[in-house]
Image (cartoon, rainbow, N blue to C red; front, side, top):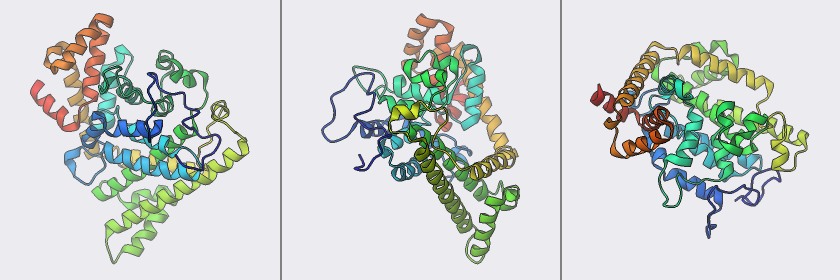
Length: 378
C-alpha cells in the first residue's frame, strides 16, 4: 500500500471484506491478493484470444481483451497514484473488468444478449462478476475467487436495476443512484481512455481508417497532422504511436486536474461521503469530454461500421447464435463438467437454468475455441 493515501481512498481497514472471511496474509494486503487471484485465473488467461476489435487471427499486433486489460491497469495506476487513491485496488478492478466478455467482442455479447432475452438478457459486466463470484473454481470451501467487496463493486460498473435488485448490497448503488468508490470511478474512465485510443491506433495501423477521417475532431486531427509532418522522413507507424501517446497523456492529465479540483471542491473526507454524492468526482473537463465523445462518434462511423469489421461482427453473431441454439437443444454436446452443472441448474430453474449454463459456457470461450465448436456442432 502506498504510504501517502487520501482519507477518502479505500484502505484495507475500511474495506467491507470478503463474503467468506479469510485469515489475513503475512505480507500481502487484501487488494494485492485480489489482483493475484485474478491474474492466476483461467478467465484472465483466456482474454489473450478474445476479440477487442479484430478477431485474433487477423493479426498478431492488434489488441486483445488481455492486452487491453493490462493497458487499462497501467493508466489506472498512474491516475490513482496522482490522486492519492488505492493503486492496488484500481489494478485489481482493471485487470478483472473484462473477464465476462464473450468471444468476438461486441458481436458475441449482442448475440448472446438476444439469445438470452427470454431469460433476463446478457450483460458482460454482470458476467464478469459471475466469473469471480461463481464460475472460477479454485477453493474447496467456496465458489469463485472470494474477492473483496470493493473489487467486486468496481467490476460491476454497469447493471440493470432489475438485476441489481437481486444481487444484494453490491447492487444497491444502481437502485439508490449513489456513487461507487473513487477507485471504481477512476477505472471506468481509464477503460474509456484506453479503449478509444487503442482502437484508434489499431484502426490506423490496419488502414481501415486514416488521419483524414479525424478532420471532424480538430483536437485529434491537429495532433495527428503534426506528428505526421514530424515523422514524414521516418516512419508512418512512428507518427501513429507518437500521436496516440500524446493524446493519452493529454487525457490523463486533464482527468487528474479536473478530478483533483472536483474532489477539493466537494470537501469529502471519507469513502462513505463519496458514495453519498449525486455525481461522480472522477471526470474530464467539459471541453475534453466533448472531444472524447467526438472521437467515439468517429470510431463508430469509420471503424466499427467498416465493411471488414462489420463482416467480422456478422460472423461472430452467427457463431455464437448457432452454438447457443444447438446446445439448448442438445446440452449433452457440452463437456461433462458443464453437463453436470446444467442438470443441477435445471432442477432449480428448469429451462432458464439450462440457458444460463449454456451462456456461461459460451461466454467463457476464446475466439478460436468458439470457431472450433461452431464447426463441430454445425
